[in-house]
Length: 354
View 1: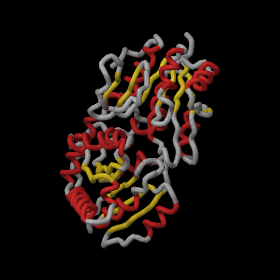
View 2: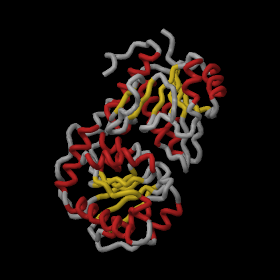
View 3: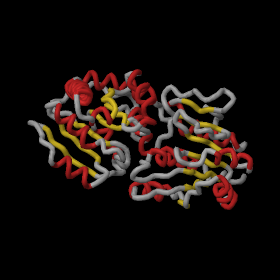
């Protein structure tokens, strides 16, 4: 039987972040486990730990073509059967031109298809499903793409309430913290006045310098660590996680972590509000509102501090959020997506599409 050959077209970097790469990597892991050939077509710049993840999986990396004709040429040269397109910047015409050239396409989207004409769409966000019915859509958290290191740490049951006088808090804001959320959110955590043992993942040395200057209250400690492959372990050990409302939301759900989210960029807004409405995580608001001066900013910060104080003092509230999060993402999404990718090219899928 001929080996299925799959290309992942995505990019990662200090401004782009790493969310597109991480979810493509998760799908790549699953396809590799099914003996497919997987390669990355894209730019991974100045994100060393993400590049190491690719290397650890043995996924070769090539420059990412940006135009439809270039992408078709590379896909033919590499004899690819399927191209996974996960980008907000790639020319939307690529999907249709690839299809016309006989190369199957899966477009990973976040609500907006950007006019792409793909064979298959994946929108793993809560409440997804607004693409026209004539398109084939894998929608919702049943199709969440998660890396093996997350799946291996998924607990067998939700966390029980665990009272503690000094909660362990983990704060991280994507692989690059492109919008500089770490400092203002650390200020809000310290402003609660509650005892806490805080670990902040800092993407840049300058952020660590800023955090070192912040005043701590009694029984408040702040430790900084660089982006790390041990993040899943840090999540598993934390009593509370404060994070951006990006693709990491679904990792937190799978791990059953009690979480407070901040919306740092416009394309997170819809998903952020759905998650908060469902009670899967606590909402801290939108980053621009939390950092603006004047009455509006003061009000937003006051509300966020009140929410954080409740999370730090109520083990029951944390456990309620954790239970709903754990139930939302079962960890089998990438297998379901891989089944669908194999169906695109007529390859047998284990057990069929689940």
